[in-house]
Image 1 (cartoon, rainbow, N blue to C red):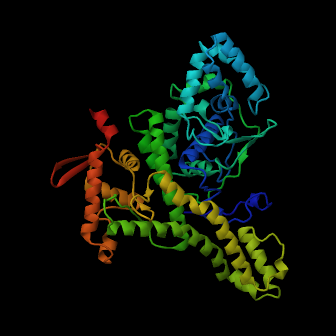
Image 2 (cartoon, rainbow, N blue to C red):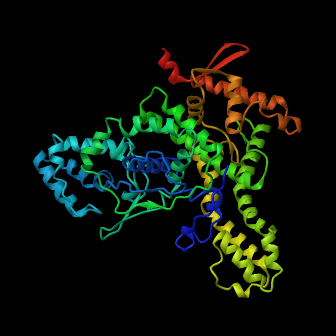
Image 3 (cartoon, rainbow, N blue to C red):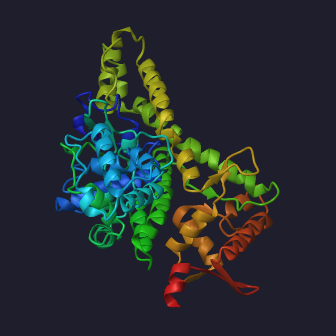
Length: 513
């Protein structure tokens, strides 16, 4: 794969303080942006690029620039509208209810130049019907019960009218985009899929299933919002360091498998979110492994048992080892500049500290020049940058593996003081829906999870641990048996004989029936 150069647009000090995490993983992975929020940001980018005639096409590497929707009327109505509850509780006539509510919204709606919502009276037969639609959209919102500000809450992405970027509305009514919850991870996701070899197939599915054939519920959002609202400026600055990567291809293949299931598009979204989370976790670990030139990433998964087991300990060890990979990669990425011939020449020059600082400036965008002359030795510069880089890394990017693994149901502390890989029923259902056609022999399913995602469950995939004496074959055989029982209880596995069990995709099975 080709690793792209650091963009010169970040040399003007308006970007990150230094370019290290971004050089490895892109600008940027962010733990506070959950897999769900990453999907929503992706869909916002996709819609904007579709309207510009560039659906899932990157005209030049890292050239993404788009103008997203704001939909402030919609989110005021759904998330900044406490008056509707009080008006409904007063049990007034329909005319009085509309009059009182419209007056209250005219006083309190945020971020709008015109606070006139009178158009809604023509779109709903009664105020009660209007209130029912608001209640439905509130109930189906993504993380709707959170304490986030109203402008950072999101309706379910039923279709184009329900998509918009994260925004900050100040008390004076000014509106700016916010990078806390839409922190560019969705932009990275968009670039990854653009650069996958399946981009053409995926483009057709995304357009046909989401953008040009939205769910009927999207008409509710359209009725509330009215004419679409857009940001005043373009959103640019996304950067993905790899022009191609096996994870990009696998991610696209997983999305295609889900989108081809015979289920409504909005039912497919949770599966897309889960597979996005899994693949982005693996992307972070794989890029760290590539920097470290270490062994392949493996996820030893315990299928939860009532008692502590060898597999549980190995799973916790696997989790901790993977959790530390990104931090190790950051440190090595910085320190290996000290092994270059250019660094050696700088150290042998008449002004070693100044020349070394120039190298760090050119390579990482650091330091900014202050206190350089007071540094006694070039190695001190590397030590300082390493310390700063690790401190910054631990704040957000270093938490991706921990936060996202929990969010998608990959990790757990159930019955243990240590976090380990222990997939939930929800994740198992998604893996079956994504990876199994109509049916697949159980042992082949275990092999597929291992070869595709590095997931270790059965003894056939755990040969390294068995051969090294860390576990017995029986330990992992029991682990596989527990998975077989779990899948059977979920209606995802059918045993035909003592030696033959098949994992079945329930969606494909329903279609065949």
